[in-house]
Length: 314
Image (cartoon, rainbow, N blue to C red):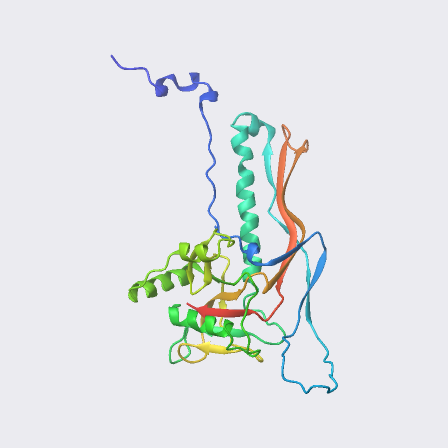
């Protein structure tokens, strides 16, 4: 005798036994805004980098001649960043697991975080004070190659003092490097080929204040982060008084991934007039009524110092 199944019962099974679950969407683990100097509550903020001062010998009793201090100021103006509204009808909410649908807010929040990362990464090839530092992985014809440890070393060399100012990058928070996943993968391959091993716990032990989200590993005190916000575009070269180093010869062709190595809290200024927020409101302007969900923030970012080196590779 055949068993009675859910298939044979068909429409007699109440809809209440059907449960919906929303899976978190994919996105960056890194939150790069934590590597910036952030000012909140202002429509616009001016970030200023003071020029480096130099001490020297003087003659006792001689008149001291003052020098002018000339900061380089960068004004960052906050702009609205929004996600297209999500509109749920009242009927859809009431006939499904309402609490689970409303957890959609987590996905909206991740989208806003990804947007901040894109904004920050878009500054990596920007010019500051008419100069740009660059470290590139290239061959003997000026074509870009996959990233390797030598290129990372060149970027660190610039940060450690081989630059136009002749001084080391960075304040008390140290240095960070943000790379595209393909660049991270190439670095790991180079590490394996060298028979070495790097773990992210090394850098966290040395600097426990670092944000661990998106942190891949440390390399000679530099925290290496991964982000899909790193952009790919036509190659650029060092500019002005900026230092340009490469494994082969200067880039002459091709598109490159554009990561960067920079001083945490000193290279980027972020003006956040209104922090990320989720807004919900009932609407009667659709059939059965419903809820509008809107997420956004008002903020923008810019390079605000010379303490950044562009890293280019395939």
